[in-house]
Image 1: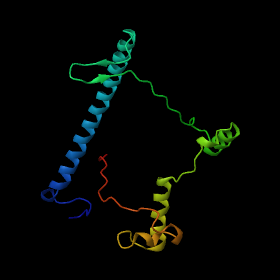
Image 2: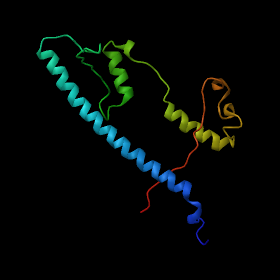
Image 3: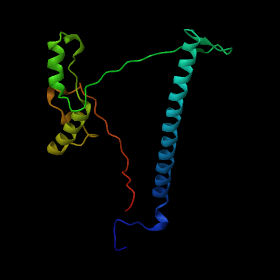
Image 4: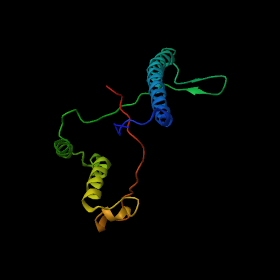
Length: 152
């Protein structure tokens, strides 16, 4: 073969199956998104119906109870500097709501860099890429697979 990136059509059955599975998963995920939108609309209707009847909950003959709920979420505004927000939270006396945490995405990227720098291979010795104080404290694992991109 002239192009080493193109395999013989007789050998591409597994790749074709992978592509088909990707398409099926994407279609199911799209269906799931639509179902979740529909569920949210029906939840609002059911919640409003129960409240308009003056009930705190409804119990179905099957024993299932349906109770209206309200959840409130908060997050930083897009573009807001996290450190600035932490300072302002402390200034407002909300120190107890501020925590220091480890960003696992950044740690994973750092570990990939360390693996390249040290030449250590993860499956041989995971702790080899970590400084001594971190050995045994950070779980490292890898997920093997392939990346599939649609042709142009």
